[in-house]
Image (tube, helix red, strand yellow):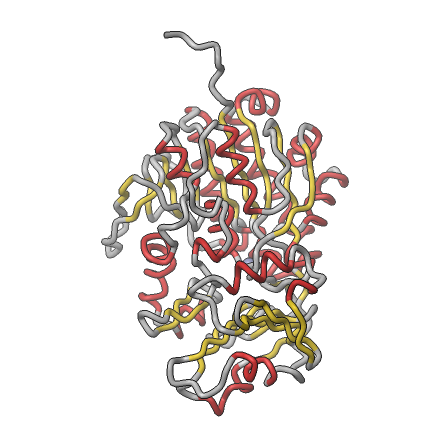
Length: 438
Ligand SMILES: [Zn+2]
């Protein structure tokens, strides 16, 4: 039987880690990023909101599943695993990885985040599309769970993982030999994105997918080092060049857009860090009763089973801490915020999409009983004693950490949250979203 229904246009989802709306808008208007300007001229642009905490593993899991942390269960870069009674550290810093036990932390980051921590109640975009017969690809994105088993070529990394059929993860796992160069060194010069670009060129040249996530991580690194303003000077052109590679591989910009619909966004924003503080001293006398995991601009405080204090007690201890803008906790079915020594309903918070973001963060079974959102200009020192003073950071509820640029081209949708992207992609392909979280 023949059908007059045309197959949906293929789609490339581009995620630029840590690029603020200001950076994207400056890139487009200043003429410094001709590829981004070309794409912006052919699409619809808006500022959208991230999730809370606005940290990469949480955000990328939300981008790839269309669900909040209440459904996908990834709570932070650093969190307390209640079942295993240990801290999980996905890489707040190299020192934090070492402090958490280097080989365990590397295993958590590369394998366990997707194989164990990412809830089965969430369906990834790769699972949904490949179940419907489309070919999905993922380059470097940390939320990659799919139906295909991949083994590593790297000696010592014996664990297999499950990704989409076209799967490339920092050359630790590669579904195809592309010849893309990889160097863990030279990260500040953009070596990781150079690898992504090499793989992206190979895939677009072959038109080897229906849906591809192209994840560029180096912009965030530059913004942590130089701050969100400084990053525009050192890293915008590199982002532009990394995206230009895809257009060139299709034969040019117009040919690229003839073949692919595009969604381009970042996972979270960044704000400047002027001062740093530690959360742990506020709870020093509660040894054996609480665990504190602080990273970037967010903290989680967990109550252990023998604790004689409650979350409200924990919140009061931070009343005089200038690094803390607001804390949130649950009391019954209510989300309660505390700021300046006063409790009030979290839905009254003025931060972007605060009510829903706080609800989803607190409803995550892996979240702490108390969540701490840092004040503008402050960062919370991590497990390894590291911070980004003088640079940039993110994780909090404030607007600068929470807004992201979001551009759609050839997609009949107006996503306003990063969790709206997957539902828009599935509709584009005519796939009914799974029951979970969508
Ligand atoms: Zn970051």
